[in-house]
Length: 99
Image (cartoon, helix red, strand yellow):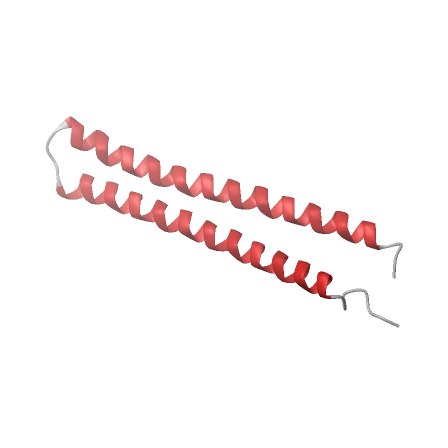
């Protein structure tokens, strides 16, 4: 008897799924890193350059953009994670009747 996942196609699909999951995690970390950079730049601007309304607006703008990167990255990560989970679930349902 052959196992269900012993074919080269099943192995290739499993490895592709693993690469996709790791890529999604790597992309989330990139969004987090970019968000932190914007927040630090905004906080540094507010802390060390204290004159002018444009500096104040620019500093807070950078902080808001940084938080936006966090939120966008998290939303995108969660959406792709759910899509991968649904695809994997649908594939398992199709293969339940076959051995």
